[in-house]
Length: 285
Length: 226
Image (tube, rainbow over all chains, first blue to last red; front, side):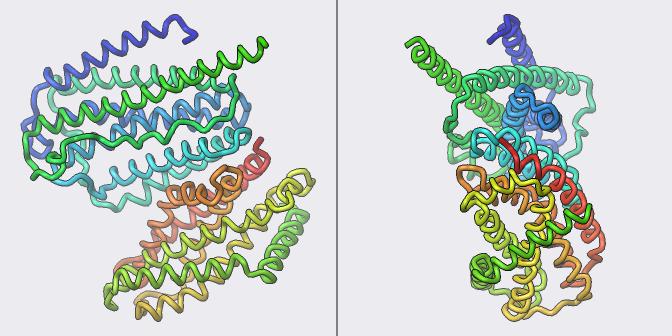
């Protein structure tokens, strides 16, 4: 990283996330209401912050794309890539956690509820954005992606209107009666925003390096294609097992997705470094 | 829009229609594809007349979405041969005229397809509409335009990617979900006459206006993307 502050921020995020996880998993008092999922309600402390971070990143992606179309600055393009990609990762976490919670609280993984449907479509839209970026010819990729980002953003309100007539299963955040619950959510919210910012920062710097290396490459294999090695029993057992197991599963899945993404980024760094050395060597010759 | 843009649009449109009239590449493959989709759906569901009314809207628009993708892919692929698209880019003719001409051409093809397919649907599924016919026509026109305008825009993007034909559905389908939901909803409401299709028709009209504007504004950028 260019900045000396980066390790400091990474350390800070690590502390914040540990504290948030401790708050969510242990310190926050259990919610008694059965509809909220009992102990599985703790998934909420990861689910909601991840959702909010992904919404924020998608909005930033739109702004960066507009700036790119206007100014054609490669920095704006790099920022658009970073926000879209990290946004998709956080949205995947939101979806996965929501499904695990639903399996316990509703007894099935998915319902065609308004919020679930619109969020799924939002996720699909930004995945298609990433697919376009990967497939577009090198020179035109940034402009086309920026145009697509604008169109996608216009689609979002229609998406919400079109699905408004779905009946709502998704609980409203009524579980925030006590200050202790609010505090746990707040701690996680801060931790996740900081976490998202650090990953975007990292991804942005990486994209800048990549722009400089400016080589056309078949990029990493499609992300999001990780299979979760949860025991088969978990998928087929009847609902209403131990709710805390659902929370553990949810937190684990969140970290599998985050770490999987970070591993992909690390591999990208290694690849870029190797390439940089090769370029240097060939320049020396 | 100035008269020269309209004139050039007409030139582009007549060229596309004449090419299509002589070769019938797009139309034949699109028509056959849509017939196959209808047939395979009727094998898969075997609906009774009452069920057919409820599901026909969905089947109908899914068949059209897929056939539109087939048509749109070919409409720009034609311009790639002999570097025609590059010639467009260096010509002084306004890009809006090219885009508008293409959209109108595709609209004509898909509408012609619908005129052939609707009777087929009625035959295969024993359909009879409980609602009014003119509303159905309005939904067909708006729905087709909604698919054609975004589809033509994404098709010009996707021909410039490595996996050309594959890219268009990947871009078009997620984006058109809100429109498709309302096309299907409106069609089903008209066929069953259970509730009013007017909110969905309004939705489609707004959707068409917004995306037509956005695609027109962004087309030049995408065409000249380097």
